[in-house]
Length: 82
Image 1: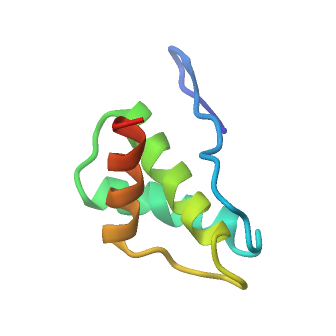
Image 2 (image 1 turned 45 degrees about the vertical axis):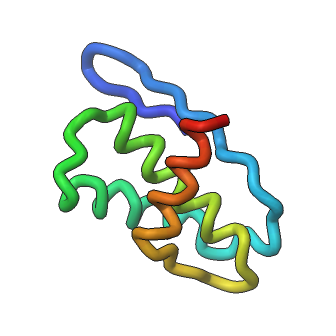
């Protein structure tokens, strides 16, 4: 996904997972963006990464799936160690 700001453009590639279903991935992504705001994640690049993780976790499940914070944090930690 790409975030355009008045000063820059930030790119966040999709996080590869085994996909079961993409229904709800966009909703999970936007919910992740809002949740990151509420969690105090101010850095836009980190917020994009959090949103992408939410979308990827949603894709692991059939039908619309709201990812749990622990699952998002786990995926992000896994990405740091790979």
